[in-house]
Length: 427
Length: 116
Image (tube, rainbow over all chains, first blue to last red; front, side, top):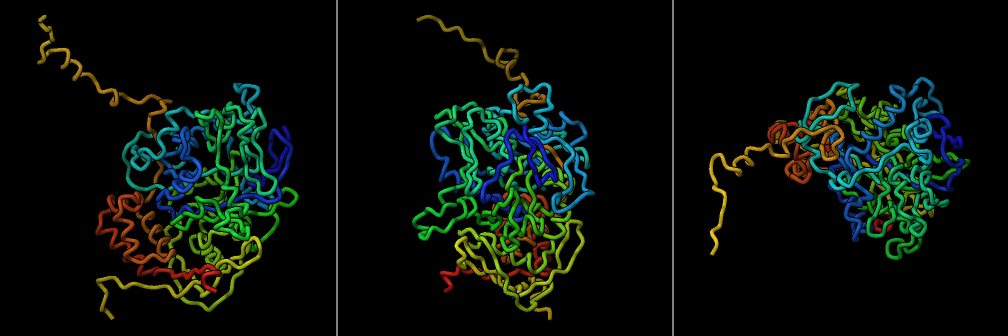
């Protein structure tokens, strides 16, 4: 095991290979608050990549309902339980010591790599704590997810299960695909070294010719995004639509402009933004005018999914505002409170950048904001239920592609107020 | 022709005994059963969820009618579920109140090549 630095944990951690980083990294931000689970992303991916025999249960992109569902069934709850067992009560964060190197504080618990090392019951060849889901667990994406029932639990009681199927409506949708992690567990676990991370964009791929279908990657991936195909007897996973990232679609990018992946480009809810961030000396090269860098590193409103797993996942989420803080902190780490406070009432710069979501198919490498006059003041609801006034400005955000060419302009205009029927002529 | 010997159907017969058996689906789920369909519940507030969803759609530029359509469509289970839980009148009243307070944010987006 080598020691590698994981910025999401604020510390070095054990990893089976030495630290090595690509020139750029594929990353994305999902705004959970706006997802209506239309599954257009899921079907865009399915109809592009996994429509063949043997891929029936293979969903590289899926949208599942939390806290009641998961694909495969209960994937996260199972792994969180396994981690807890190796370190009872110790999977905690020290949030007093925040700094540039430790934006969310220090994770004091075990990652999946460290847990495998410390677990006396694990077989010696195991590189990451994990499990192989059963066939039944793969077979029912989304089944009964929104009709769970049971006693409502108090904070601190997460982890005890309740039986389906009915509940008072409240939940949120979690959009998932391969996180193209900086320290991939699938790559670490492969005994054939069939999995590799591309130097040019950090996309993690399985070499189909080297894979022998041992399913070690399926077992090790904490997000369960490596999947076995019985007809070819090898494993497959999301390929980050790399022909689009490379700008090789002759119709959509005749001049070689990199495009967002199929699942991102098809999002009707405008919740997705994807791109590439530059990596320098193993860290994100500061690019405050890159929308991903701005949202993730600069403003910290988009947070990694289960950072405690330790793979330094490159998928980031703006947490849903109506979900209890304790639940969100388990899922996105200790940055939740600050992220929600900022997102709930965005300032003019953040509001402008949020308009870039799904404004173009091309990857936006940088943005500029052209400032305009103040238009209105609007009352917003904070996570606590309190209200705060947001100022709206007539600003225009301009997006530039990776070739430096302007590709989109989004201008905030005067908000429209509809008078309700009861007050139609009440002036 | 040989005489067929079939068991009589009626009270106290084998068929009734089978019918009186507990249906397998009603047997209690045991821990670790992969088909157990269990989930973790957590306290939540559907009213807050409704308020925030409507605010978000308003920030996306959706009008009153477009937002109400999301609640009417059973395929959008979050919004349809909220309508089922809270009732159509309550949802409409909440949407009206939120839009009166927040308005609909209008954003004009144009791809540069199209606008140029």
